[in-house]
Length: 447
Image (cartoon, rainbow, N blue to C red; front, side):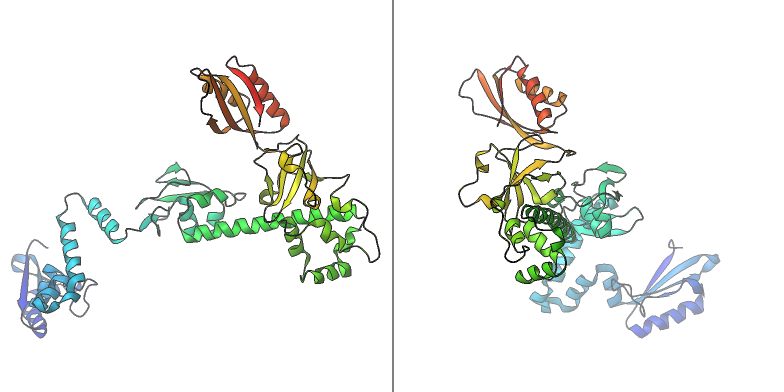
């Protein structure tokens, strides 16, 4: 019915409705096809009366009725109409409207399909934002550069916390993938999954970053509380103090000394290294009881067992890279909890006045996981030597985390350092034996 249409231009607003009456008198109107956009303008400011009638020979015709001002807005847009009405009197305050008009004109002049047009509009209007969809078609606005993890937290905090993988437009993609406008994102979750500290390296939205940091902080505090309790109980056993003292009136008296209301904050301060467990344990001793000789120097027949699950409050020293099977001791470090060193490490030799900062440690019997060890390998400087060494390490069920090549002083020899993952000291020894068996390797040492 748009093939045959008429437009009636009148002088005044009242004339629009008078003209409508004339049209309906001449031709029979179709009532359900009448729209009054004068009384109810469109959101873009468009105004006009639209009516569809049965014309000559039964053909349907559309008639639009509007004033000259309405017609100018419909044809040229609001910005151009302002310029038309004000002429040169618009002044500097008209600049934004004129720039908008110019920008729209450039968009319409662009060649390409509708998708290209829409994409350019989105890029120009929202340069710092990206719009993606949920599998149900709901739209989510994110910061440009956002990843599936940002998307997950934008949908719901619980969804973000349990994220393990993501499908972007039906394809599995890494969680650090940068999302683009119009993509559909599906988050794959697992009940056992938890936020990963590595996510902080690529998330862009404030909500995701805030939630991950809060989770890691609470996780660190929980681990520190458990570790602090173990350290305090160990010190109390050294001093022959019953663990029952951690409750009741004795505990209340000690908490009053530290201006605390409950034990968890005290355990937390011990686990984070802010208070030394032997000194705190002394507060639980009955009045008049002497401290056993050597108790505050860290001497104990029952060292603290390292289970490998202490998480953020247990740190493995990079200077000596301890692994299960090594003789170890721990340094109580403020803010870091316990830093584990090999006993033979030069840093791990207690100096005068620091004995209380060191505690004896052992590895728990059932400890599992991957631990970092560093090897220095000297070999012949020939083609393929690095590949041969890497193949042997991989064949021994170990991963290479980093490789460093020393500057060549001797052109006939190569000096390499490998940071590898091992299960324990036995696993490390097996890898070293395999490397020593290679013809191109002259020497293997653990740094």
